[in-house]
Structures are given as structure tokens and as C-alpha cells.
Amino acid sequence: MDYQYPLSADWSTEEIIDAVHFFENVEKAYEKGLRREEFMSSYRRFKEIVPGKADEKNICDEFEEVSGYSSYKAVKKAKNSEDGALIKM
Image (cartoon, rainbow, N blue to C red; front, side):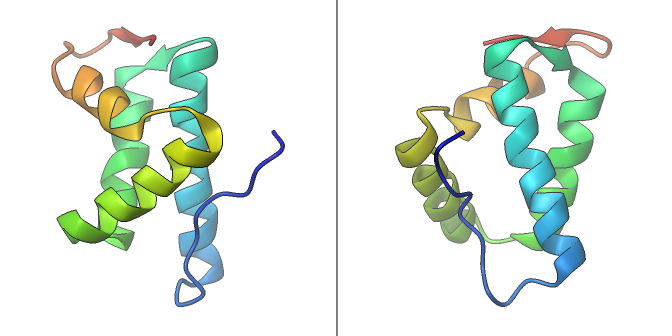
């Protein structure tokens, strides 16, 4: 990848690692797919780090702008999928 993940200087090292893990899972959903449970687990942790809807939208929009991958669409697909489903965009 030739881009940087949208991160906050206010986040701890652990929060940065977990946020990067979520963005990597969005990439996986687009590139090869991954299980719903793994994706949703990383999303739930991301929401602990970024609980506000407006902040989430800004960060995810920034990620989409640099990567071309929509976190919103991946999350929507995962939420609408059954347990055990493969999330593939």
C-alpha cells in the first residue's frame, strides 16, 4: 500500500494497532474476503476507539479517499450477513 492510515495523535499505541487492524480487515474484505466474525470484532474495537458517528465518518472517509476502499460499505455488508459468512466486496 502506498498510503497512510488515518490515525489520531491522541490514540495510544494499542489503539493505533487496533485501528490499523480494522483498516487492514477492510482491505481484506475487498481483496480476498474474510469471515464476518473477524471483521465485526475488529469493527467493534474500532468503535471503542472512535465512538462518535461524525468522527467515524471523517476517519473512514479519509481512509476511502486514500485507499479507494469503503469502510462504510464493508461494515454494512458485514452487518447484513449471517454468522459464518465470508465478507467479500
